[in-house]
Amino acid sequence: MKALVRAVVVVVVLVLLNALFTGGLIPDFSISPYFLQILSLAGINIILAVSLNLINGFTGQFSIGHAGFMAIGAYVSSFMSITFGDRIRASMAFAPESVRNSALLLVVLAAGAACASIAGFLVGVPSLRLRGDYLAIVTLGFGEIIRVFILNIDAVGGARGLGGMPRLANFFWIYLFAAATIAVVTRIVNSSFGRTLIAIREDEIAAEAMGVNTTRHKVISFVVSSAMAGVAGGLFAHYLMYIHTNSFTFIRSFEIIIMIVIGGLGSITGSVLGAVLYITLTEGLRGFAQYRMLLFSLLLIVIMIVRPGGILGHRELRDFFSRRRRVAAATPPVVSG
Amino acid sequence: MRFGGLVAVNELDLTLEPGQLYGLIGPNGAGKTTVFNVITGVYRPTSGEIRFKDHSIVGERSGKITRRGIARTFQNIRLFGEMTVLENVKVASHCRQTADLASAVFRTPAHHTEEERVDRQSRELLEIFHLQAFADEKAKNLPYGSQRRLEIARAMATLPRLLLLDEPAAGMNPHEAHQLMDLIRWVRDHFEMAILLVEHNMKVVMGVCETVHVLDYGATIAVGPPAEIQKNPKVIEAYLGGA
Image (tube, rainbow over all chains, first blue to last red; front, side):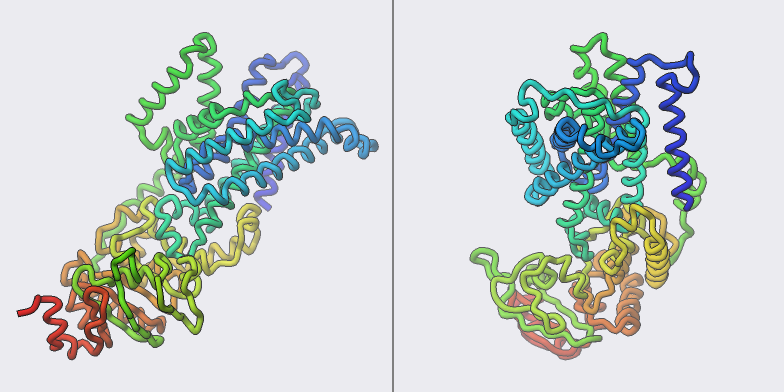
């Protein structure tokens, strides 16, 4: 019940923010389209970072193929809305325009997420047997295979890229899904299933010995993470209305990794912080675009030296509010035996 | 069990009855830990059979074997270091839970009742092992003796019928080892499970086990009650070398 109330509050706040930013709420007020776009892309990055953190930060399986799943979500949902969009909208002729668009967006995002999760399953089953560097390289390879595969399908534009989908996503939808992603990942991590994921990160052999089917749990976490990347891809496509495989190279995967490493692997708050920080820096440094990656490498090195666990480490936002309790709990009474 | 040309454990014939406390000893490299790894599915035996409650468990994943009711501790402690003591125990109880991922995402009533039950049971288990004061402490920050006890508590949370303890007294002082003996006996009586104990501390082995099984170079050299084993010339030779 409380969760339902909270969800309604989130939706209302997002509707108001959306109306405010696009100038519908106060006629004279609207923030610049440039700033709105940055905000929206930051929201998509939040979805990508938080979902990747589930697999990299909490389950401890270092995957560098997230852009591939994002690409599948983007292309599948775009193909759907271009090919069947009019038919789906026509089937709901009784409803107002905005409802029809929203319904279409949900349908194509669901299709994108489903395909991305299937791809996640197919990639995850063989590659999650590997550990550490090997897993990283295999997922990197799979991500590129997905991209090159799409590049060679002429039906989705091939090297020309794919355009012509309606602009269905906006600030509201992007942040609604970002909030949903954060909520779902938080709940997974703070459940019994989530504890087994963290246990796998800590010691896979011990986790298996405690009755956890580690392969199964790793694949589930990988599939969930891929589905969320698919949603992010779908939103990305229906926000920019044009996609090209160049947007989904391994560089994109690395960007997401940088976000979660800066914020702190194993912290959802950290991923959000990392995503926002990353996009702020990339946009802020647009003037020196050619030195940007240099600066990021420097930033990463500094963070590795000063705070090897990322800015927040494993801590979450709520840990800062309940600091007193934690300090009290950290000093147990001396017990003999 | 062979590794390439090396026969690590040869023709081991070992039967445990419910409620039995069985000791497995032998000099370094005798194959004691290998026996554990074969039983728990870490290694697949090259020949022979392992039956548990009339089921052959050869070739099953170790997670599956644990769910069947065989739990173990590790000689070199393998706790989930970054997790709290309480969470360590809760992870182990996951295999006895029914609420699934969907119930966790939607926070259904079933999820909440199960979380409460698991929390209560895990805290009870910590109390048995005198770890309740450390419940919210990270496992890696525990003193060594407590980490060993947590290993046992965590294995107990999987509700085993057979518990394999791999050198539980290693690194403990005589006082701690003595308390551990009482604890092992109490656990056996209270939960009515069979315990297979590998241990170098002879006081512990001779003190708690009803039957002691001696391995040397992978071969059984003696089986019997502790008093007989202590006098067995073959055992003395294996440990001290031939005269």
